[in-house]
Length: 192
Image 1 (tube, rainbow, N blue to C red):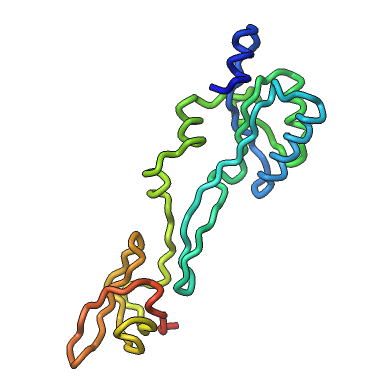
Image 2 (cartoon, one colour):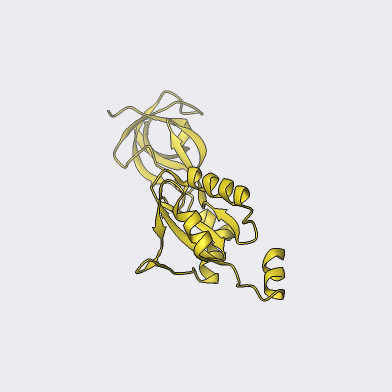
């Protein structure tokens, strides 16, 4: 619980709650900055405490190269911690690209504390489970080994393991088909 929240409870003021705000997809950062600017301009820092855009990290493999990327976890939504009254609700609704609050019959429904906790502080296992690797190979693809002891040999993908970023390739070696486990970066697709 934040220091501002404890001060408000001690003074008998309404407790701030978390709400989901529906916005135009792709405008999350613009809306966040707009709300923060208006809060500062109108000195409402005690009523609107946080504006949060949840992001998630993932790994993409393209052309044999790994890239760590982030993307919006909930496109079209921004979370806001606020004491909702007429003034704060109007301030938020007047921000461009805001469509409204998540709720029933235009009445904002606060998020449950356990939901907010999962979004704000995802545990490590959840982050690892959400790691997404786009495998550049499929079973049956012809590939050329470009690195390692089997460099320049051609084989067929037998198995793809996206979690470990490895591929099992059947290479014809000395007249025998030999299964060889290689990293995504060690092979290049030749079946186009």
